[in-house]
Amino acid sequence: MDVVQMVDFKITFKLEEPFGPLERMIKEAITEGKNYGYPEESIIEIALSEYDVSIYCQGEELFNATVHFNEFLYELFRFVFYAATGEIPEDVKSYGWSFNSIDELPNWLDKEVRVLRGLLGDEFDELTSSSFLRSFLGSYDPRLIVYGFRKGSHLYFVSVDYRKVRKVPISEFVKSAMNVIEDAISELGSCTHIFDGNGIGEYRKIINDYKRLLNFLKKKPEGSLNAG
Image 1 (tube, rainbow, N blue to C red):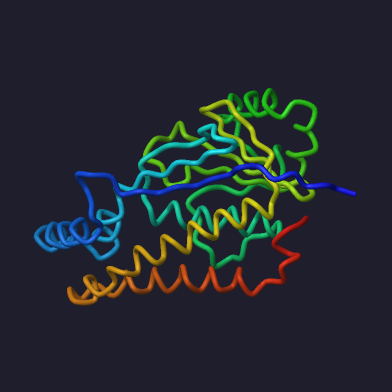
Image 2 (cartoon, rainbow, N blue to C red; image 1 turned 135 degrees about the vertical axis):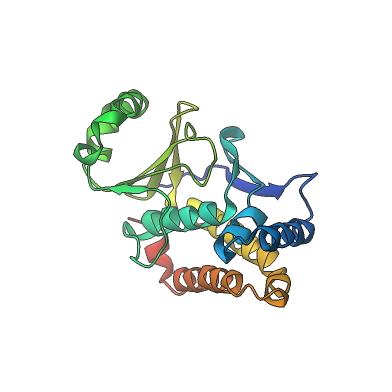
């Protein structure tokens, strides 16, 4: 019997001063975008470009970066779907990579492969022989690479730049990530009216897509979100 021991896995996001609050950031992005004739997607990207995201496990930092928040949320969705089911629906936007085995990684990632081998040790061959994820999690810094490997009832969360790997129960990872997504939807959704009032309908579509994916996850049987 596989006894799953809980760990303290935490994801936080914050719009730091002097950029916040979000409403002001959005209004400034819309003004700038309209002055320069930016498309809706670019205006939204600017509005959500200064969020800081941190990830901790057992109080240890695994990731800390300013991110493209829209990209971060979609990547978090990818990790949740992968952790919970081993598969990612085709209609989930991707800003990272999925591989079916280590053999699919291009040669220019040889250095990362050596780091992974050192971090994963005896489990390297098993974990990299099936599907796994690679991502910047929306970070501006291309050095902040994370990998996700699924085995049984655990997700192996690997931070390449931090040289750390943490074995997180899937149930705990999914719960933590979904809570963060729900909080983000609430915060971002509170400003939908500003975009609507400026004729930028794309933002509402993005928020609705977040809600759709979250509801899809919530409707899955509890067991499918807890184990391999």
